View: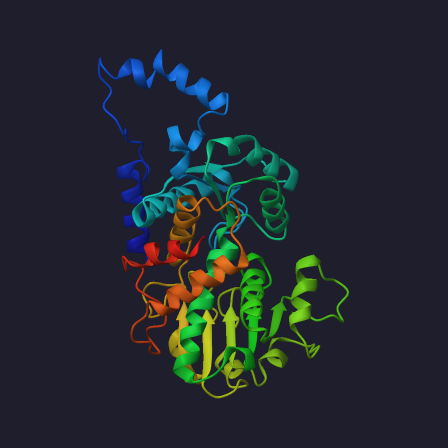
Length: 377
């Protein structure tokens, strides 16, 4: 985004003073006030407390998601704190409403340890029908999500992980049609082993059992390394040939590279190490690991980024509204790996004419949310 657009964005936010408002579902007047509030609401509350009525039947919880962050890993900005994270959380809530008609409340927490975050969310969870975790740094985000999934009976999803993974998988399914390759027979390199990198590699492996080499700042993740956390130990098992070395070693004879790391971490010479008919997903934002024109110079047939000003934008908004819409509508308490695969396959199938510049549907395609939601059962 150039300086002019940045200033326009700031001016728009200042003008609106926030992107969300609460609206009423009924008219408050002299006739309804006694029903909506005292004394009538007391009877409603007593029926909920006694278990005669489910809260979802009489409150907005049936369509309400909490969008929660501690501000420790916001977009490409890093740890900017809870206040800095709030405009992003509001934006996420705006997308929930726009694309899936889901009400959501952006919540930023001024606590940062695993226990504090988990306990805070557990304390407020009775108010919500679902929890969307956002922009929480790795590796603590893995344990936070795991504990919440175990303790809550409502859907919980860390979108930086799973929304990204769903859309990447959808894009890969269609990219492989363009280059006439099979995913399970492809060698895949994932650059970055944080929240998104772990989830992307894990979902692709569950879908295809392909050979996947994950690369972090110290090189290829393999079972020979002694510095692996639990998530990286899992990633090491996808490296079935136990390859070690640096990024260039990983890229030799690779078919697909997926960047979830930092700007400029891929060069044309790196891509030249790969097989012919290569696929490059350079998803760092706002500046990708390699610019599309350079990726094409390096022999890439299909190139995707996270940006809207290039073809093939890999954007989480293609996934999370439909996944939560389905979970809320179908009383799904846990979002599973199969749900994510269903969502990815549905997204891929919505592209009528797959091409090198069209591997995922347009973000504003009205079919996306209803079609994905049908598969979350």
